[in-house]
Image 1 (tube, rainbow, N blue to C red):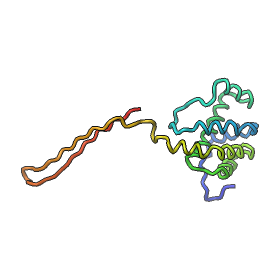
Image 2: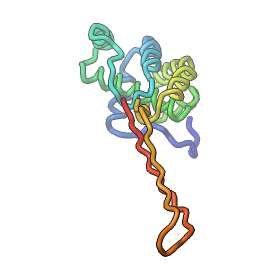
Image 3: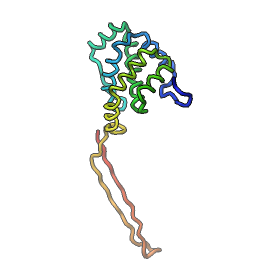
Image 4: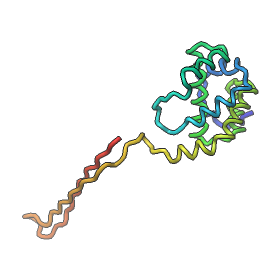
Length: 171
């Protein structure tokens, strides 16, 4: 269990509780494979949504776990969120397991999360460290100008530099 001074990185909201109920209702034997795939897809793309599973794979997941499309989306979104938060907070697998159980996740799924995170944490964190912060904007060019005022009518010796930089960014 979590110690009292160890704050949870996961909010206790109705959406999280809904996701926990869905995750707890699933057969956790296949969960690790899905979690590993979701962890491999984390790349620090700042919320740009990309499809991790094809349409056919999503259909198969719905049938296998007997979920509706909204339930599947909630399940996959929650799993991705848990793994992303684990990466951003550099959570150890045992701590992740304890925090998920404290939120109400069953033992089987929480151990699947811990096992998947233990397998993929190093690679995922390495990818996130090399990802650019704030998106993919790159410096395209730099223009600069320096004006130096050397004298004024009321002051004979003056050195008052003013620099102006123009930084152009591109996607």
